[in-house]
Amino acid sequence: ILQTYSGYLAIKDYDMLGKYHTRMINTILDVETTMELNRRIPECPPFFSLVISKIEQAQARQVDFRYDIVCDMNDLHIDVLDFCRIISVFLDNAIEAAELTGTKQMHFSGQVKPDHSVLFIISNDTDDELNTTEIFKRGYTTKDGHMGLGLPTVRSIIQKYGNCTLSLNSYRGSFTVYFEVKPV
Image (tube, rainbow, N blue to C red):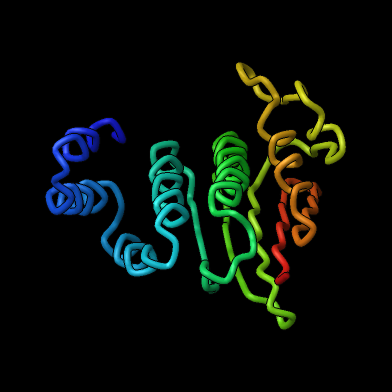
């Protein structure tokens, strides 16, 4: 779908690109979800576009993707590309794991804590209890056809920042990621 954007970009017709984008998203997602996310896109276009694409991906796999993002994305103290790469890996993993369960559910939230740090939580149902130490080793994977590069990449990005923390919990059919970005 992203390739279809290139025609409008090539001729620099940004008005038509915007209209095309709105029409395409409205046909993919329900109107309520689209309106809520589109209203938030000006805060951080790359992030909210990423979330829309992940919702689309989850719907295609019949995964119930719930989200609750109640933080100002402009207050994050991390490069937006690094942030999107981290969130993308975790959302991809959550969608893939949830797809294999009977419930097919996942949840993504972002909230401001009293100390003004922003906590992102991604949780999904899973049929496997994961070793939260092993999954960060390069080449380690539990999925067929994957190379085990996503989580080691996430760890190396997070290590560049002194204000980011990551913790994982795998317990009784649930896997949860806690990613926190603290103010600097």
